[in-house]
Length: 117
Image 1 (cartoon, helix red, strand yellow):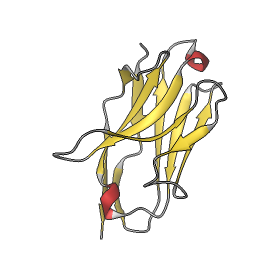
Image 2: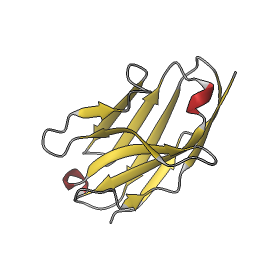
Image 3: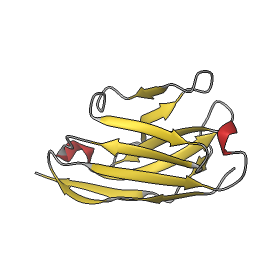
Image 4: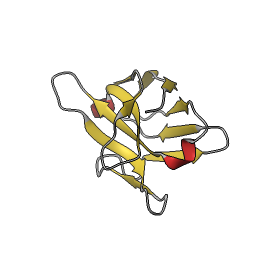
């Protein structure tokens, strides 16, 4: 496990942008695959964006393709999520996550993103 600290959540208007940042502890950050998840009240936690383990390429949930961009800076031990064209449906608690195996098992505390119409 690694310790993950998130920042950047807040309240934005529909159509606006927000950038979330996740800082990871440890000196082996590059060995972890990273991703972002979100969970709305009363709903299951869902995958939003992440990097593949084999290639390091990014992949996204269909609901955010073309609007969200995940980026990683191994030198700084950070992973960001740039969110553009935000919709009220994007309102949720967003979590940074990390894994070395097939499942994400390290999680940040979560940061609230609220998109007003």
